[in-house]
Length: 541
Ligand SMILES: Cc1cc2nc3c(=O)[nH]c(=O)nc-3n(C[C@H](O)[C@H](O)[C@H](O)COP(=O)(O)OP(=O)(O)OC[C@H]3O[C@@H](n4cnc5c(N)ncnc54)[C@H](O)[C@@H]3O)c2cc1C
Image 1: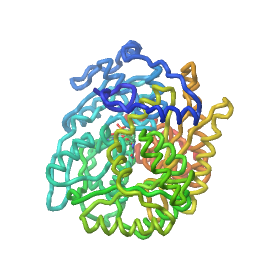
Image 2: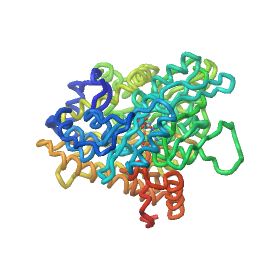
Image 3: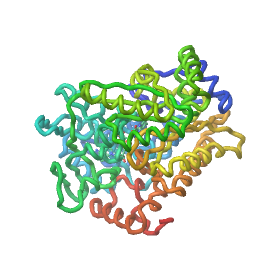
Image 4: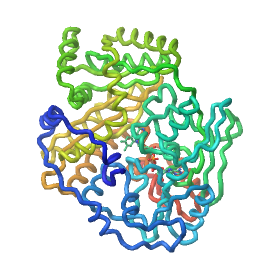
């Protein structure tokens, strides 16, 4: 069964090895496991539902708890401490588009707010219930999960938008196809969630972001139904798919999405190489993407991330051997790991491998074969479970991400890492910070930073949250100051809302507000996320 206060299925664990525990102790100090509230305790705190009865609305208390929060660190702090300020008043599970339409009309007529809920894997507060005088209905889309049409000639597949990643891929694989969209949250996130948060999969270099894969669909909104046709290309004015992508449940509920699929690859491989330092690795990956070498994945870790990954992997003997081998080749403590993936026909994979490895060698990198790539592939979704073990050992972990042009990357990484590393000096705490580049473009790259700090020894949830807030604010301000986007893939939700004006400007914000009002005149859809429609000021724009 799915964990109610952490990541994933409760039968799956990813324990911390002794070596990993020691590494963390040395990095930030020994930690104290916090006390977690039980589901029963939280259920006992849920108030009575304020929603009038409806045949599709379930007011079961446990379901209301399970849909109250997503997967951000503040969400974890709330769930683990049991201090959740607001719950949905009911949860509905529509199984047809007509039922979705009916629920939007119901919410509008009873003055309720409606939160669309895909897999609930948001890490920026998208699905959270905010305290409000109006009742809140969460619409869980998990029953809109069918393959509706499949056009083998055009490579198009239409799905109910609530379908989970593994179910979508299973349906396609049975027909010899794949979507190729694999965010790390793949097991629990949905097609509709991917589209409205502009998500990015691990093999975006080959398959593209969800934006490229989304061909069209159907969205039910308070103002009516929006149908997005499947033209392969069109010059008929602005593309309305762009309004749906990134709409974060503010405009309506995407009930159906058609995606561009690809025949299953003949072969796929993941390899690793090590560079003497990050600068050389960065020069290599930039040249690889600018030369448009047809790889499906590139992921370059900083020295600290490389060291952390090796320590967490738990294969101490192999790692010792690797370090000795690297030292012989002149690669020491500043070593940085690069993972490379190639996907397609055998000829294409061979070509991509040879071209990429030649550039790796040119920049001083050493190719170490397929072992690390194979391990990465095996654990690509499982590693998310490590967060449960870290929390239970007393460590809070969060990630943040941005994207900027290549010339800005070194300064951006320095500024983000510096802001985080020194962020808790006021309370004498150290922060472990590390970064990788994983979605690369000819003109720039995403930057993905992970940070870890100790939960206070007395388990104080307010102080854990305060520490997160201090770190998140410092890093977000650094991102905006140096000209990065506030988010490359996670979206805006509540946590990035105040930084949006810096990116969109005054006219851009006014346009987005008008769009929300056009689709949702009475403010029913997911209020308080993405954009504050009542706020007409410019904020730093
Ligand atoms: C461990 C972990 C790893 C992650 N890895 C990645 C990653 O590699 N790449 C990445 O891009 N993101 C990643 N994420 C973030 C998250 O998984 C994505 O944002 C994902 O797209 C959310 O999908 P979901 O179905 O869970 O949506 P939810 O979290 O349920 O909802 C997100 C938003 O979409 C809205 N929504 C959902 N479905 C619909 C619909 N059908 N119609 C209208 N609105 C809808 C909701 O109202 C909400 O505003 C990760 C998260 C976690 C916890």
